[in-house]
Structure formats: structure tokens, C-alpha cells
Image (cartoon, rainbow, N blue to C red):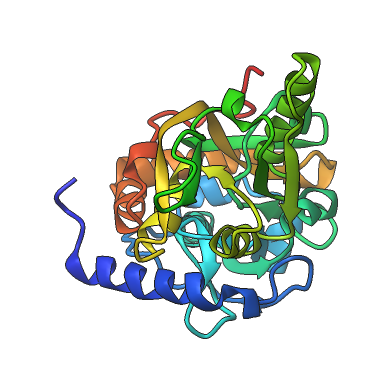
Amino acid sequence: MQTVRKHHLVAVGLAGALLFGTAACGSSGGSDSSGATTTAASGSTKDAKIAAMVPSKLTDAGKIVVAADASYAPNEFFDTDNKTVIGMDADLAKALGDVMGLKVEVTNAGFDTIIPALGHRYDIGMSSFTDNLERQKTVDFVDYFSAGTSFYVPAGKNADLTTLDSLCGHTVGVEKGTTQQDDATAQSKTCTSAGKDAVTVTSFPDQSGANTALASGRVDVVMADSPVAAYAVKQSNGKFDLGAKEYGDAPYGIALPKSSEYAGLDKAIQASLQKLDADGTYDEIMEKWGVEAGEVKEFPINGATS
């Protein structure tokens, strides 16, 4: 879209360049680092009707604690202070808090540690979680985005690694706990069942680790969500090439505890997303981070079908 402001693009580029070059210095991968999100470019204010839907656990506290793995640019990553979590999810969380009348605290956490800690250390998870039936056994989701999986490789190498079937005999880098780890592991069994070499799946505590491994030649290819893969390639200064194909478009969901203490929060968040869509804030956030291709117009609760 043509409404992206130039200064937004500059900010994203600088932050992304820092992430690619120095993100391994961050505290991603289990050790937490709290920080307020940057203010979203939002005209949204508290909606009294929606705020009344928020569980008393949160209204009494006056805030909502949001967990995100800050290694997944442009969706969630560290600002130049290597502490404040910024990105699409952080801005959207801030805007949701504005509508619900809650202060938002975004805390960095290892991706695979977030869901087990919901309802205890964190109130919700906004970290590019794919909503699927398996995860719905543990948490509820309010869907807000759509993304597939993409492959990226060292520039000029492994150009044939563009599908799951092409991975047999190769080493694949993925972030621990992601659907990409599941898919690559399942593909390895498919390869060996067909008499081909297995896939060597190398998992990292954060996406930055996978990117570093690719740059150093320790893995042949990295799999990541499509907006994250595209951003990593863009910020690599020509070191990575993006595969021409992606697969498996699926919804991102805001993860919520199933605990009775959080009853009604799913509907409050759903109503907030609808309001942000109606007033243009949702579109503005997606455009700011260059991920408008994943915009959706409906925000179902537990909308995944597989």
C-alpha cells in the first residue's frame, strides 16, 4: 500500500540491520528482559464497553503482561537499546491495551517457554504463534494474521531447496518449538521411508541463532514464517536468497490461558481487534512493519481447522 510513511521504513531498516548483526547479544532464548513497547501510531482510545469485558484479574492489576520471543523481526525484536521489544506484535499489543484500558508490558521470553507459562508469568502470548488444533488443547487463540513458511539459503547456493521434499539429505535450521521444526522433523521420516537420506534438523533457541548458522555455513537452509524469512533476507545485505515458494498459510493467534481467571478475555481481545480494524489502526501497524500481505478481516477465536 502507498500510505507507508518514509520515516517508518527508515526505522525498520536500522533496527533490522542491528538485529541481523548483533542480535546474538540479546537475551532471547529463555532469559527474560522486560521493556515497554514503543507507542503504536494509533488514534485508538479506551472503549468503555470493551473494557467492561476484561477479566477483573487484569483490570485490578491495571496492566496486561505480554510474552514475545524478541528474535523474530519484523514481528517482534529488540530495539537499538537491546531491551525494548518492538515490532508488529508489540505495536498491536499496545493498541489492544489502549482499547481495553490496560497498560501493556511486553516481556522477552524463549518461544517454547511462553505457552507453558501463560496464566502464571504472562497473561497472553503474542509471538507469531500459529493457531493449530494441537496448541488449542492447551491454550485458546484469537486469530489476527496469516502467514506461510518460506525457505532461505546462502546467496548463490542451494537454490533447489524450495520445498519440504527437497530437504532430504540436507541440514535445516529452525527455531525451537516452531511449526517449522515439526514440519522438518516429519519430513525427515518421509525421506527415510522413501529410502532417501534423513533431514538433519538443527533447532536454535531463537531465530537469530538460525540466521547466524546459515551465514556461517552450519546449515544449508533455514525455514521460518514468510514475513520473517523475507525480512531476514532483506536485512542480510545480499548474503541470503529467498526461496520462490512458500507453503502452509495458517493463522497467527494471540495465545490466552484457558483458566477461569481469564474468562471473557478472548471476546474482549476479539472486539478490540475489530475496533482497531474499523478505525484503521490495524492497517497502519501492518503497513508500518511491511507485513500487510498477512492482513485479515476476520478475527475468529480458535479459528484453525488443522
